[in-house]
Length: 110
Image 1: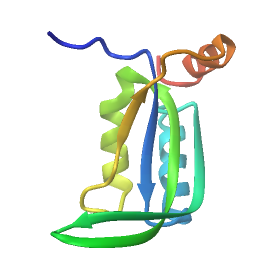
Image 2: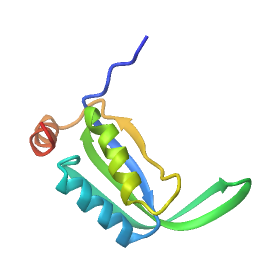
Image 3: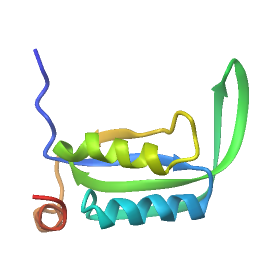
């Protein structure tokens, strides 16, 4: 059974630095794929890549959008990103300030 697409989502994307994160944020906003993007600089990410444990200093994008736009968000991030396999993880919004959620609706592609 297919799961219902969430109406609103928060998408997490890590980027190689603040400049790359800002570029991705602007592209998402210009394309009306996101209502808001927070950029949090200076995070430390620990992970395995090609069978080796790595640590990188990155920036985190927190993207507020609509579930139906996720495929276009992924495509936009992949085109603008320097990583071969960028992190793009969408989390469903299960509740929140209705006025804020309505604002998201008004700011993204119809």
